[in-house]
Amino acid sequence: MAFPSSLHDFSSQGADAPASSGNAQHKVRDYLNRIVTRCDLLKMETEAAGEPDLARSLDRVRSEAMLLFQGLQAVQPNSTVNLPGGIATTTLKAAKEIQEKIRQIQSAARTKTQLNITEDLLELEFTVYHFSKLIEDLTAPAVKAPEPGGAAVPANGSGVSSKQVVLIADDDESNRDLLARLLRRERYDVVFAANGQEVLDLLNRQHIDLVLLDLVMPGASGFEVLRAAKASPPAKDIPIIMISGVDETEKVVACIETGADDYVLKPFNATLLRTRVRALLERKRSRDLEKEKAEQLKTAFLHLEAERQ
Image 1 (cartoon, one colour):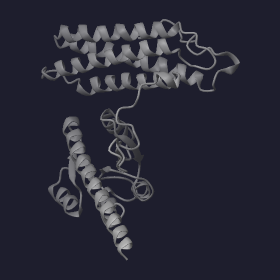
Image 2 (cartoon, one colour):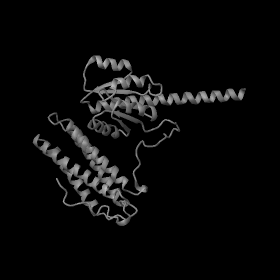
Image 3 (tube, helix red, strand yellow):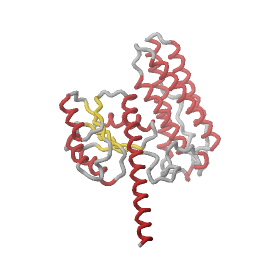
Image 4 (cartoon, helix red, strand yellow):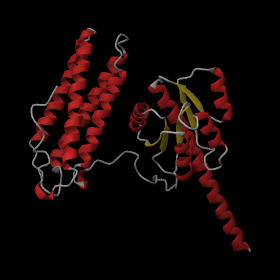
């Protein structure tokens, strides 16, 4: 469905307007349009499947998205703050409520075996999430919501980063996008590689906590990258999950024997993949903390030895 009018008032900031204001207007319209359109499509699908309760819930989400559009349409921000704090706070609160309603719809839809709308609902939830982040970016720093788990160093004083980084290695952009949305929902940072050489370059120059590695990629295959990573001292302890559409026992065994920590087939189960990623990252965090403590003990021992000397 098309919106009734443009969002031209949203960022009319005169000569002092930042260069990105037009892009921000476009993104706001785009996110809200996607929310409304997807709700319309899902409503039709649930009505056709004989699920009027789900259809009504989706219609309420759609109506609330339209109210957000109408509220933001009337905003006349000044030249220094894209969105006034009060408007931003109200908008963020409404977006969080919409996100919670979508989660409730997801829970209800899982019990309906004749419905296959899990991925569509997940896409809808992530659209609302990204809309919230955009509103935060268009708001004065004082009212921005903190990013859960986003601190660079955890409260225990450890040097181990509290926000873990996952490398998605896949030459298919849609696969990368889907995996990224799943992982960002869990508050992980995400980086990308489209071929084998990019994977190896990133492993050598950037901190990575886990790799989701497609088996079939241009240039070096995922198996070749796996073998090279496990032979490299800086990367050998990084957990790697192979992702592939190839369901062949020999290939699975070869990857596991070469050092892969897991092997997931496409199309993957999102819940199962999240569980495996979480377990491997928790294990790696524990291992990193143990290494750090060992280094601290070694340093303390050498210091004591030096004092005794």
